[in-house]
Length: 611
Image (tube, rainbow, N blue to C red):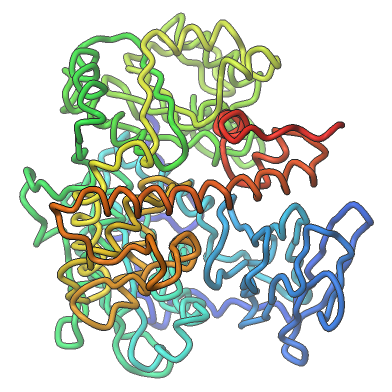
């Protein structure tokens, strides 16, 4: 297999200069200002942000700095701030939310030039003005796309890379809330390294082709590289010493950063990793009574070769189930390659999945294996498979039928031995009826179907999940929160969890950071949860409940669920009115799967407006 190195700076790391040395990368110019273009039904609005006018508020009417006459826009809706060449966007308590990467934001988020946000259904696109260099600070989707690609290359070519998690130094804490401190990180990095601000106080850095020794030296350079002085806390995870999957490497780097101190600012998880059988591993499923039947079926399916399709809402843990199938099967010692099909642009999907030959297209200066070859003799997990376009679906079907792939630009096929596990939050059967997904591929992937239930139907798992996430949040943030108050736990049990397990983890992260004592209190939980709780002292409020008093606890649960359902039904009705009864568009606006929205329309008895 062709093992040539790129000519873009990914040379042998054993001879390269340390970041911050005389031969380091030149300073990267920042844009002199940006324009943000807002596209809506009435046309296009634009605003300019620069050092002289760094902040503007967008809303439906004055006193907003920029007015967009759309009913979906709140007054005010969002604030945009120019910070060191980037744009900080904050939601101002709007009704329909501000969205980045298909997620509703509840805190400040940085956008790079070329980045996008959505204000309800109004798009905001950032355009740079003045000199701009290629940025190594990436958004979430782009960062994880590069991480997945580097993981595939490492598995194919048996080489190393590393993930660094960074928390700001004492001198940077004042600007940590805005996230602008992370924009200084590129000055200490190589041109091939990539940065992602996953939280205002935590950045992730991908170090491609870095040996364990060089990764440790670069981690120290980042720790001591703050412009204002002081020391950053850094966690390091090296493939494969700290883990062999992208989620595990990221989690372990963040956990290591949480244990770092001023006296020991760099913690290498690769040399202090937990035992393989650690029950707190993020890959170990928590199986409550509600899911025993599912995992019992998965145990029987694991040893088979046939494709498996996993259904479930976003954030329910479909990848956890896929890893369970892989690790319980005969391929457990071979690669498990997760691929988020929704994060791959359609124009490069074939070459990412199947690889390409040298000279196959402009810029293809060397051959590159795809995800299928990376997963040879192992398992390929195609997450969000419903996002693949029809042409790629046709090639995927042929690959499954012939058990061979043809790289883009190749003349011969290569035999592959891969088990396919696919997953989606979308209703593939409905997509087949709408001719958005090939029926023959659907039946080929759907030999065995497993469905992961949403968290709202798995309340028996919530306490175990809270315990796991509490420990992880303490490690990540250097906190020592030991438990959760009964009234807070009662609310967690009755909340609907639209984002499922991922939503619960974010809620615990939020609460641990805000908690003042050694217990999470009701007021420490995110506002979106508290909005569903009755006022303190009101009848049915989630106060501390003795374990034996089941009737009172059930009454609390019923009242919370009633309030939640009423609020949720109102939001659905508003979205349907705004979209003229178009369920697909309403689902996109609300950030929920179409099948789930249809179910809720039926359960709540909502009538669709006349279209």
